[in-house]
Each structure stands twice: as structure tokens, then as C-alpha cells.
Image 1: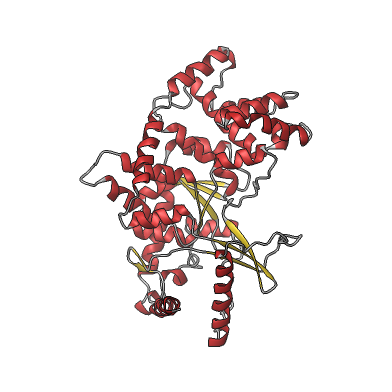
Image 2: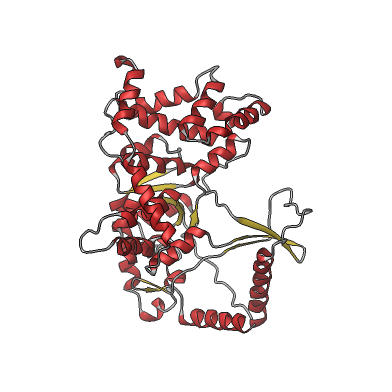
Length: 428
């Protein structure tokens, strides 16, 4: 699979369906919950350009990555878990909730069921929306309009002497970092994080108790993800105070929140100018920001390349045909694979064909693992993950459309086999 890529709504909106399908093939896409909320909020928009809000949302859902995508856990939940003493991995991999551990035939597996978000996008592609989603859409748009950025800017301006206000993005980031990491101010930093990041007020006593039990460490040591999110918020407010970031666009508050999810990806792509100037302040040494129009152009070129192949090649389906860039490519996607998947240009050994018995064994094993995850007591009290964290199998349930834009995703043989399997299960 390709490098991990976090995208924002503006980038996905800019793509054709073919380009979006190619994005899904070239990258392992990290889906931020903010993208889900922004998309849902479009249901409450006034009709524009002859298209209804449902048509706009459905078109965006049609472009959303499904084949190689991971819905990251909402940052507020991660922050609160961390403040309570939990651990949030910040190692460049997404944090995906809902894994169900099972033990089948003496082997350990984890099953990730199809997420509610994935099911929602599946419905939205078909133009089906639940009433609760429409209500939530209006609430989200109302909340977006309630951000008083000018008021926040004035409040931070009043807190700082004129000579102490940051003059550029780097200065705003450095000042935010200094506030988070103030020596001897660990308790104060904990309180600021709890307040600024919007944690439930009643949780504060338990948060403080967890901090004390852990040794009253500096926030960056005790809860590094919370410190990361707090630093971004303080940077944003400090930048507002001196006009480095405009306080006239309420959506800037949502846009800046995408930066919370940088620890869970290799790449961040956006067509938003705010992201273009702010993301670099928080990227790690191995991470990269991609300007959306540039990546869109390369995806279009890759799509044209694969469409020009003979029909018998295209008949294999895009899932198999475009599992990586062409090995002679020097475009953006290929260059990123060189950086993050350096061995990909080496010739691959042909996969040995499975015998019918081997295929049946794999399908049967997968079915038993999925069935175990559906049982209410699939995880017994005595269940323990292996000490080294290794597992024998991992299953991620997904729905991949048979057709996306110009492309059939799988060969006719694969489609027929899947239909036969589903028919057999229905008979049982």
C-alpha cells in the first residue's frame, strides 16, 4: 500500500471521480472526522449552481477514498483518553477505533467492522440521508457561524504587549510552544489544555488525579498529543492577535484543526491557502505538505496512462492494475513512493496461483474469524493479546463499489466469484 496521506475537504472537492479513484489506489488515506463533519454540514447549505445539497454531498461521498482508507479517531476523544492516563501513538500511523480481538482455533485476530462513518458515506453516495444527519448538519453549520474570531483576536491582543506579539508564523509557533513547555508550570499547562481543548468540565478532577499518579510530569511528557493540539490552538490564536491569520473567515477555525491529525500520517494535501502557510510549522522532519493542484495534475496524468492500456489489461480491474505507480514514472506520486516505499520499483515476484482447496481454506478461515467477532462474547475474560503485540490475522471490512468513474474496480471473474459467495451465504 502507498504512503499515508491526510487530505482536507477542499482537495477532494477539486478531483474528478477518476482522479479520486486514482488517489485511493496510490495512497493509504487517513480520513479525519473533521472531513466527515464538514461534508455533513453541506446538507444545510442553500442550493447553489442548480445542485441540491444532497447532490453536492453525494458527489463528495462518491470521491471519498474507500479501498485503502482509515477513519482516524476524533481528536477530542484521543486528548481526553490521554489526559486520563492513556497512550496515543504519534508514530505516523492512524489511530483507528473499533477493533474487535478474537481467538479462533488457537490463533489471535483483530476484526475492524465497517465504521458508522463508512456506512454513512455509502448511503450518501446513493442519495440516502437520515433525518438525524440533517439535524446534525444544521447544528454544525450554526456552530461554525458562532466562532467569534475577531473577539478571540482582541482578547489575545489585550493579553500581550505590542512588542510581545508575534510578527510571523514562526514567531507565533515558537511562542505557543514556549507557553506549553513553560518550566515549572506543568499544573498550569494541564489546566490550560483541559480548558482550551474543550474537555468536559466535570472531568478536570480525574484529569488532575491521573496527572499526579503519573508523577506530575510536564504536559509534553504526560500527554504529548494534548500538548500538540494545545500548541496548534495557541499558535492560531496568537496569529489572529496580530493579523498573521485573518479573523474574518470563521471557517479558519475548522481548517486549522486538520493540523491536529498530522502525527498520524506521512503526507498532508490541501488546496487551502491557510494550510499551505501553516502546516509546515508542525510537520515532522520526514513529513511533507502537498499543494492540492499539483497532486491533482499528477493523478490526472496517471489516470490517462492507465486508461491508454489495452482492454485486456484494464479488464483486470483498477484495484489490481494500479496497485502502485508505473515503474518508469517520475511524477509526484512515484517520487513520494520513492521516499516512503523505497523498494517499490524492484520487480515483484509473481504470486503463485491458489488451488481451489487453498482458496476455500482462506475464505473459510476469514469467515470464521468474522463470525467470532459478531458473537457477543467473542472476547472471553481470559483473553490476552500476545506480549509482543503480534497477531495472526487482521480483517478490515470495507465496501468497494464495482465501478468508480471510468473504472471497474475488479475483474469480471472476481465479481462473479463474490456474487456466488454472497448467494451461497444467503442460502445458508
